[in-house]
Image 1 (spheres, rainbow, N blue to C red):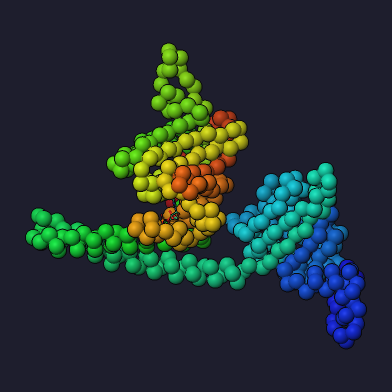
Image 2 (tube, rainbow, N blue to C red):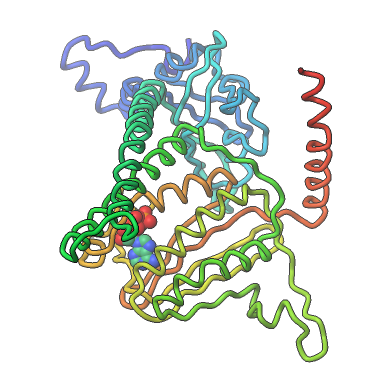
Length: 419
Ligand code: ADP
């Protein structure tokens, strides 16, 4: 019988009290009572401890699982039912990185081949020379939570879709009423109608954001990642976006590496400055939404000063930022900023319209391309929103671009074959 095979069933309070004095018994009582799956892995990734919670979730008994490799018992697949690659498998990665891992989007294939969404937390136990000597894995069945989230997302998605149509009609009629070629109205009526029109536009934006965030949550956001050279892409985008900032009297700036683009993309002192190329695998349309949102926020919340955009990186990572000299964000709000509907409660947000969904959508999109988004801010000085993406080498970019060309050339043949 395995370590946790014996259950402590209460056989009198005095026995329990005696048990509680025994460290090992205490430990067993706690680990047996935890409903989550708990495993202890040795430095080879072999299961040394498998509690009843783990047995219930996986369908493997403690005796069977103990002594086996964790990856043989905890079989993980992605949302497309593809086995988790070693480089993505947290049960393998923990021994390579030595960093705690938390995953919420993985699927466990149980012993009876049933697929179960699980949440997984893995913590390494490190020796003095920072080698991973063991790992503690805690996992839980999140099927009910997922089903509930799905029901909520479906409701929001249907409701916002249905409500967009009447809102668009109201907006259209208000625009007609405000059109001097169509109607004659006095100034007071114009003022009221303009206010109604702008609130209706806000409502339309809210429904649009709700729809996008519901799609982002259940993975229905359309996305076609291709190789994008971020320098050229962001330079173009910044020249499209800067008009809104300049209209408000703000200075603007765009920098690649440490050089201003104005110098980097032209002949400088007779010599051509060669700018590094930053390739990433992203959907340009989706990325445009993200950058536009960050830039719009920077303009919206900055009364005076400057909005800058920049791009840097190293061999592995591309980093870009949108920085402003606005009021900054209080430190206590920073951890919540990328949550749904979160808005900093201050006089600015009370007067400046917004839905609190923009940054949530940005995070969801950035995560689609294995990126990370975060903010650094100092009150009274301004805020910088950063995004990191994995960088493709020039060779990887060329290979992927060739594959993209091939797949588009093949498409008509495929569609002929299937028709
Ligand atoms: P909103 O529609 O309210 O702008 P977002 O999700 O885009 O929603 O932003 C969330 C909140 O973060 C905003 O309400 C605002 O309080 C704060 N915020 C975002 N960007 C900035 C910025 N550049 N400067 C100051 N505050 C910001």
